[in-house]
Structure formats: C-alpha cells, structure tokens
Length: 114
Length: 114
Image 1 (cartoon, chains in turn blue, yellow):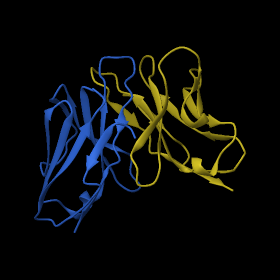
Image 2: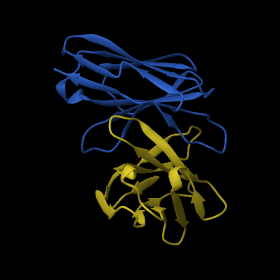
Image 3: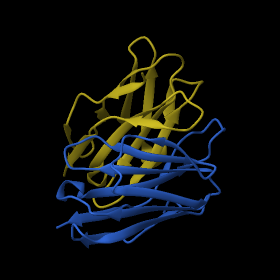
C-alpha cells in the first residue's frame, strides 16, 4: 500500500444527506490533495492544502467543503450533492519543496448520489 | 500552461510482446514528468518520474520511460508485457508553482491479451 488511507471506500447518499470523506497519510508529507475521477473524464484537481493551508480551489461548488486539521489528515465534507457528483474521490499527498514532487494516492472513495 | 496529451484511448498488445504507451507534453522550462498506473477500484500508483539526467528512466514492475526533448515526448515502455499489466495508465507533468500540483493526461487503457 502507498501509506495513504481513505474511508469509507464506498458511500451511497441521498441528495439531502451530509457526509464526510476522510483521508490520512502516514508518509510525513506536507501537502494533501483531493481529486475527482469521473468516467470518461480526466482527473480533476479539486483542492490543494500545503502545510495545512488551502492553496488552491479549482472552482469547486460550495457543496464540497474541505478541511485539513493537521498535515496528516484531510476531510471532504459533502452536503446537498447532485447525481452528477457521483464519482471516485481520490486523496493524495506529497512532500513539497523537494526534487521529488510525486504524489501518493489513496484507494479512493466510490461515491454514489441517489 | 503545462499540459500532457495521451493520444491513445486504448492500447492492445499480446503477452510477451513489447508495449509502448505514448505521452507528449507542453511546458515552459524544464519538464518534470511522471507515469502512474491505476488498477480497477484502486487509486493511482506511482511508476516512475523524469526530473533530470539520463533520458531513459527505470521504474516499478519492469516499466521504463524515454524522455525525448526534441519530440517533447515521454513514452512508457516495457520489453515484455504481462496480462497483469492490464490497467489504466496516466502521464502527468508538474505545474510550475510553489506546490507539487500535477496535471494529468486523460489516461490510456492498456489491455494485454494472453
């Protein structure tokens, strides 16, 4: 495994529900990311956190709300989602400021909005 | 703006034959290039990267990639394909900013037949 865990692995929620996705990295990294992966579409970067500060928000609807309480944990809070939000949500982490720059991904949460 | 293109949606190859998955890039300055693989219902796994140095980069699972500056390409190769190599492959380039943001290609599905 890559050292990045995500829970839950599968989530089915109604459009009026509120739920949260959790990501945890055990790699000592200082940057964390949320991506959305939909069928037939390129990987979409949603949010970037570096040193627990949000540094990028790629025009994501406000029904998605990220939280990064420390460098090891990242959450994605979901509320009043739409069916088109059904996708695989991937968390990743990396060590910024080094020559590596590669990101390590968790297994993803498969979200279905009914 | 940094970008990568994967011209093939799918590549088919017979087991034991060499395989190539193509990637071309567009960057300003020196490129930082990456290959990732995604197996069904899994997150992306880092395979290899090019930062500087030797144009032939070796990575995990017997994969290698050749950086060609004149052709702005970074093709993924393997001398002898395995059925277990069947997966979705992503090329990525680092966006030039203070953070390790990557831009991914749309992915190429590799199918290795027995």
